[in-house]
Image (tube, rainbow, N blue to C red):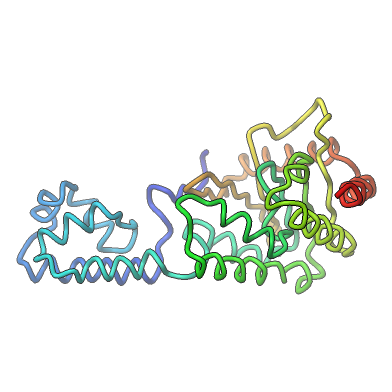
Length: 277
């Protein structure tokens, strides 16, 4: 989509990526190899080598294994790469959006896959990560859950920010994690729906019209009045800044709001689902 920063092929740089890249460059130069010579040995162009060394591209395991063979098999590169892979914080493609979230005057979220992150109670967060493949470690699940719960403070710390959520009814009926987890989800959603700065709507399963069949979306408005969108896939994210593309997504969201249940009717449905557990 035009105007977006696709961060799967060229992820947003981070300090750890730059440090790792500088480490690769130092080892390469110590070995007396040019980028072109080194690239030929690791089956990569000199431009790709430059992207890694400058911290613009995240290396993968195959690069690390090949580079180790070229640079002496000391194991130092593997250890350095492990530090990059385990660096705490949001996924690299989400960091810029997370920064914008903290400044936004309005935040709109439509989800058809799972409960939006800002509404997830800790038991649900754990259930989400416990279903992930490859399976994360217990420590990683604990860390991710704590970070997700911490991020939810946005709803209370920014009372002047208008939050809007549209969630598919099927998500609430899926029962991810079991009845107790679902109950925790419904109770937390009802709690947040009671906040003055939060509008929560459910998209009914029986609705025959749907303005966002292309998938989930997030939209925000900055204090300067600029609108930005964010879309996410399995292993990538796109920050959409091109005005015509953002306007199109805003139009879709506005239509969704008219198709979903009203906030009042949505609360009634949440209460009915909770009572049925």
